[in-house]
View (cartoon, rainbow over the protein chains, first blue to last red):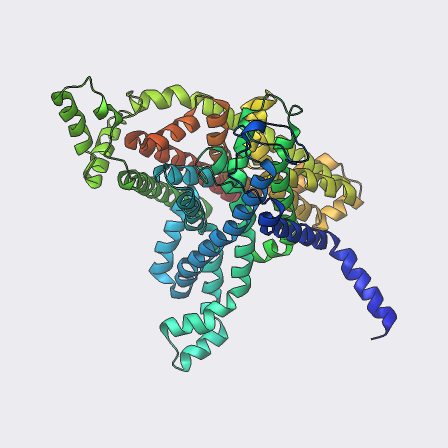
Length: 284
Length: 298
């Protein structure tokens, strides 16, 4: 290929994927900043500056301090780290459950598929937020911060598999009757081996898509739970618990720096939407 | 002459019957699962009232006995169903009032909130998606996508908080939560319908836009839009919980929130049944009406 054509090809690629590339860069920047929290905010998220409680942004505290004097910038960085690291963990768990329940149901077919899909329909018939709030509220609330982090994201993972399971059941069902699976069956491969070696690897694109599209949904779900006081427990920060600060606001213009966690969340979820626009088509 | 049966009508009756059976089974199972979840929740057996130093041993024993009935989840559920058949939904443990009375008092507010929210979201979504489909200007399409995308990225609870901050009605918050979901589907459906060859031809021949919309686009996209309408009811009901809880509106959403926090088994079970019933009815209704429209078209 000539150099001119390569240049045109590269330019077309950049133009076609400009938004996606910018979104990727934003996500990498936010993840990088959150991982560098130890260096950027050495004071940590618990240290109290009692002489400067509820202060406005300053040189020492870039985003001011909260009502008990903790540095808001440090809390935003650490909160971002918790939300951005644990949402993929919950997405992994939900995708795994979807693969096992939906994939197996589709592969086995018959009454297995009917029972699994009835269970899926039952979970889908309840609004996602209602289900999430009810189940989280039923778990112990007065627990250590680490347990609350685990409980929150475990619930997200355990309840978020239903719609993915439906898609995977349909995909596995079509693979079950495909030529190569029939040939494998004719060669004597049966049961779990057939599922693990032949069916599951072919579900990988759908699984990847489901995994990636679950992440922004779980970030938003954690934020909702946090605002309602059912998310990550104090003093550990997360986007949800940081957004709870908005409850005490009297007007928007009064303390605009309190909206930084919201802006960050919107930017990250929007970036995910841009990056995942093709994945969503694949998962549908 | 033998009486001829309409095959389409037979299919419809079978469909309605199947939906009815599924609905009843799912509602029953949903109620049972919610009751089981509350029963297994830590702290279920503990009642704050038992710690009241003013109560004597007789009263504490009486309180414990009321909880004993709920220990066996199967027995509790069966008895609840028996009572429900006679119109008695039990008494709320945390609020000490009959569940029927609580639901009757709070349902109108939630109905109004959800209804107005749905109306606002559908009006906004249809106005934007129809204008985007009519105009077919890339910049306008991108703008509408950005507007809906922005609301999609804001947590429902934040919209509820902002509605309190700006002193706007909670139904607007519900509307803004539902709007991006409805817009996303309706825009795709309308864009697909408007790109069909017969509609392109009709437009090229200079047919009135309203005539094209009601005679050619609605029959194509209508059944699928009805399915979206069914889903949007479920989203609106879910959105009502944070909105009512954070805006201090005394509706069923706030009641569900209080029941979950207080581990109030009779109340939570009945609310779960009610929510499941409403969402299933909306989805089944949308499906049946969609099938009717398709049959009429055929």
